[in-house]
Amino acid sequence: MNQSDARQYFIKTVELSQETQFFLSSDLNAKIIGDLARQYKIEAAMLNDAVADIICADFDFSELESYLAELFGLDEKTIELLAIDLIGRFFLPLEKYDGQIKASEALKKRRADIKNFSAWQEAVDALLLAEADKSLAVIDEAIENIDWQEEKNIALEILNGSELVEMLKGNEMPEDMMRFNAALIAVLSNEQKNTADEQKALLSNDVVLTIEQKATLSNENLLTGGKITVNNQPASPTVSNWLKDYIDVAGGDKLDTLALTRYVSSSANAKSLSAKERAAVTNLLQLFFNIKFFPESMAGLPMEDWRLFHFGDLEKTETKAPKKRSAEPQQAEAAPIDKTAISEMTMEQKLAQYDWHKVVGIERRALLEELGVSLKDFVKWSEGRKL
Image 1 (cartoon, rainbow, N blue to C red):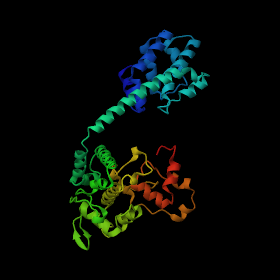
Image 2 (cartoon, helix red, strand yellow):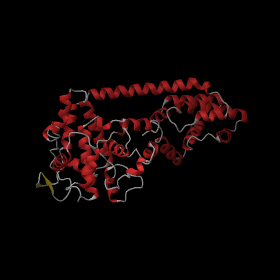
Image 3 (cartoon, rainbow, N blue to C red):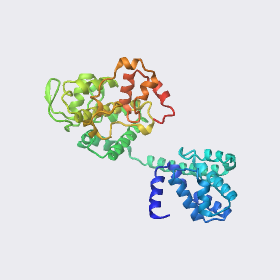
Image 4 (cartoon, rainbow, N blue to C red):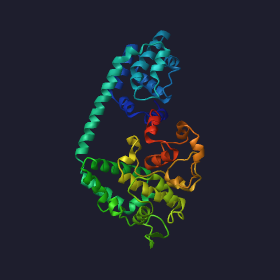
């Protein structure tokens, strides 16, 4: 394999599932290739290159026989058997882990019995199960060694500092914001294991006071420019003051996504904001409520889609809104939904308009409320769509 082919192979393999990637680097991979090479009296290195070529060709088995014949110069019958064995022993066991590998379909076209390859399926499954158990053991050990109080203190320090403002404005790298999101979710999830009073402790530890105490962040860093009015008094547009104003105007004792949307669109303080500033304020309010009502705020979402705040490219707030409207912060100024038109749509038509991968957390709840679709119906509709 030359340098160019090796580069292409690397690019392709990183797109594969973790299970497939692990198998490709395993001793079992080498054993299957070696066994085939000995059985058909061909070079293992050349067969290994053939496998790499198949992967680079997006698992296209349509011309496999002619490719193998050119590569190894075997007779037609032997090539047919080699093709079937290569697909069945090497690729078929990976199909359940990577949907793009259509090995069973390729075998059926060659009138091969899939059951003949059950032993290789069992071997690959056992390998991957053992690796998964090993990984879980490592994760469990790591979790046991986490100092949760220290993690909590770190999260509180970020929530109470200037770094939070940079995240809300979208000035931090998305990867850094993603890591903070994951760390904060871990801390909140750990809090769920404690008593109800202790669950509130994270939110009342000088960062978020309880709603009964007029909940607010104690973060005094500026979030926007200009001046705002809080309790009829001029105030600096800090994180703390923006939250105080929202709670005074809209309340904060429940997760009211429509009130949030109305506030950032038309409240006295928010109506003069630029699109980017409005996105930052929206992001702050979403973060506040997603923490306050965690984990209920994440209901109906797969864990990999849990976002306590938006960490995409907020610069897009200055551009024209896309044709398909989502409930992301940067689209707060989008035209309101035509409720007359919506009422005439089926649920499928309502939901099919949006890219739900981009509408998560509190934004998703707000949009579902506007569409008149219950969370239960949405979850049922989204099954099988990998949202």
